[in-house]
Picture 1 (spheres, rainbow, N blue to C red):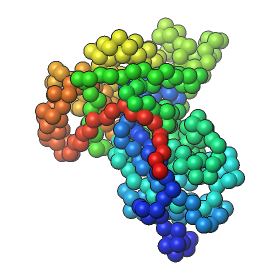
Picture 2: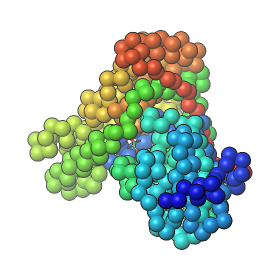
Picture 3: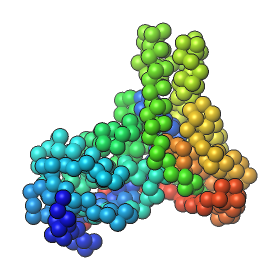
Picture 4: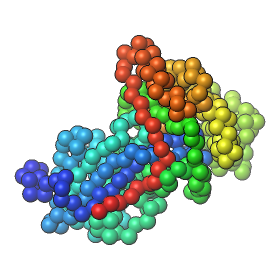
Length: 383
Ligand code: GLA
């Protein structure tokens, strides 16, 4: 590829037509339930990836610059190249999926800057995919709606990144609403905004700084294990189409035929779906203590039954019990690293972060980082 193109089509920080702000997300509860047609309760957060877009004067030359990687990806639309760096796979993925839907994409420049930690379980991947898709939809007036953007971004992740993810992250990033969580039924895609004013408590994220990027193999494996469990259940019970239709009693009757690992995975998913329903009720009743307890139970399930935690995450969740003004803690997202999500009284944040950072460093020799997240609006555009 001719690198001199970059000079000609160079995106600069100053000249652009509009900027897309694409948020990360937290998931309050309902982990690894989305691809099992279950329930989730995420929220978009006040940290975004910002993407500046402009058309250039070519019909097919594109240039995408990532500030974090200090790298420019140049390609032509008629011959999409293989991605050389991981982040380029997202770009190729989204552009390819868009080109399946429309013939109207032409040359463009894009400048990407991120205020979201990468690989930390706050869904920088979905933010990037949905931000790109939203920007190109606007730039070339493709006429796609928000669900088109959510679904094509998920397909980009499946087909070009290789993670067989569910719909939660893309959904939360695009459709988030300020001060609200979103209760999504991943089977019907119906959802409800749940008011989330938890002051004087707040959402605190503790980042293990253990990168989970290499875990997509384990993620896909969990998905396959759940599908294997479902196949066994379908043989025994005619009306079952998802794990949601299954009670613990029904699962127990199939325990032997599915083997202990698959049994554990399915058992976690069935319990987690119920926890989401209970958590929504607790939130509606403003019962944050109950909500916090459910978070702890989720963590236990993810650690012991679903086996997607890691020593660093388990340590942080266990340590959280030393602070009485902290109501609940759990690992968040796909697992194997990334962040824990904590509900904690605002007055306790500073001293708790100090203590836990010290203890974490002593144990793992890794610097902890932390930030607070506010439920915020989904993808938006500014000029
Ligand atoms: C990742 C995936 C989501 C979801 C979570 C686990 O973030 O992208 O679809 O499965 O893991 O809940």
